[in-house]
Length: 63
Image 1 (cartoon, rainbow, N blue to C red):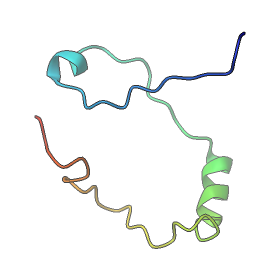
Image 2 (image 1 turned 90 degrees about the vertical axis):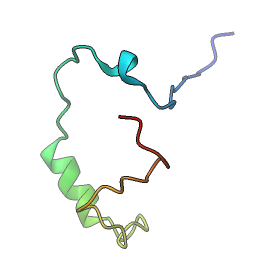
Image 3 (image 1 turned 60 degrees about the horizontal axis):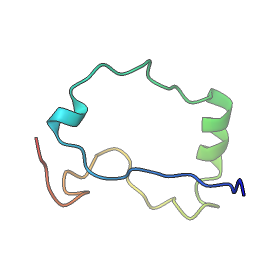
């Protein structure tokens, strides 16, 4: 039948796959962002440091 399925391509992209025009950037809703920030501890995420991006997050840098 028509089941509810969704596919996600989470593979690392290489330059031929990333060198193209993108649509308009998405912006989060201010009210939703504030609510999530206020509930950060409840979500178990209060110890995350979001001020820096870890360059080794994916184990390598292909650019």
